[in-house]
Image 1 (cartoon, rainbow, N blue to C red):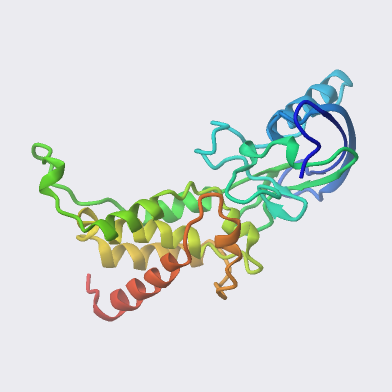
Image 2: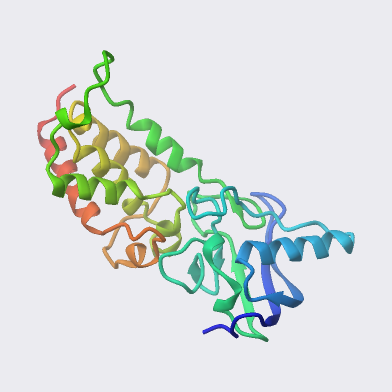
Length: 257
């Protein structure tokens, strides 16, 4: 547990610094004093960067956007865990009350061949974008919008689809996996559409193309250790991987262009 409400922390930060994709990186040590336990982890990094700028040093590059646990950009590997020590939160939702006064915190970028470091803690996750793009479009009737109640979807299928759709594409699953597998991410995106009537037309071609693109991007194989589900900030279920494997087997056996 952290130090309690209203208190301040003195911390040692060991942060990965890397100028670009081709450069050799290394850890850099920084001391921070008077950090409020009510700050988020990213706000603490803002304080560190302000300190570095005042000292005439280069600020640490890291990804962020919404700071509300929605965009999935705040990809930091903190003390050996994607998004840090708390379950079910992104880095921006992690607060400094989760740490103790005097702690040493080690911060690294995602480690994956398919996610090359751009600079410092920022990695290139465009591989996920290419996997999504490979799945193509969803065929829809472009006439007047139907009343939602006219599209009947079993509650169980709707619940599973919504669960899969909760994936924010942060890449924590890849970072947590000993093989750097993207199976949880891809299976969530495949499942989301395979479960709904709107996704049926391209159902077979979609899974074949997305899995092929995943392999082409250099992600590792899945060995079902479950680390991905355990570290996913949105709790995406391993059941999606089993579903995608069934979808892939069915499509491989029956799909014709």
